[in-house]
Image 1 (cartoon, rainbow, N blue to C red):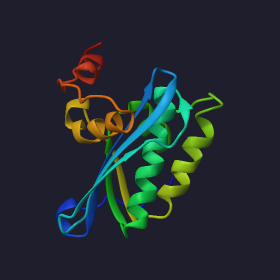
Image 2 (cartoon, helix red, strand yellow):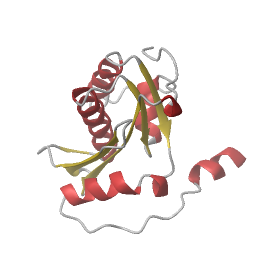
Image 3 (tube, helix red, strand yellow):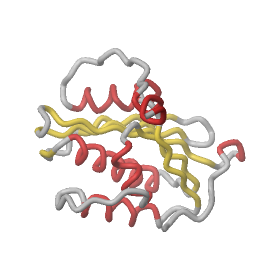
Image 4 (tube, one colour):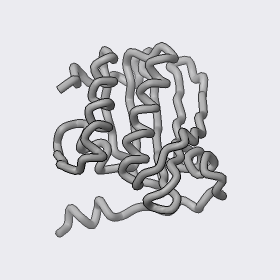
Length: 160
């Protein structure tokens, strides 16, 4: 797996990235939202409508790949990447697998991007902590911003 070590966000050279993807309807047009913050605090926002169609999981994986590509192009070598998609993060990390033909190549592309960084951590965050990336992917599709609410699904899942 391409994870060599965990980046130290406080060391002064770690980039932080949030990503989100949306499909309208599901499946439908894909919108991507990415927020990149450099170690010196420079903030870059990307609302992308790549002209693709697919389901929400494809949108999330496209957003993750785009986030990695944009961060790499900006010069990032140590990266903390956050998103609210359990599917995208678990599959790219390798803790889950899938045989869904449309997802497999996107997972491989993301894994290939991971290998270009010195240090990287993929981290799941609840939807309400990914509001800026969500706003941008909705903006890419011409949608209004929706109100972010705390997401208790993961917490509830642990109790079962």
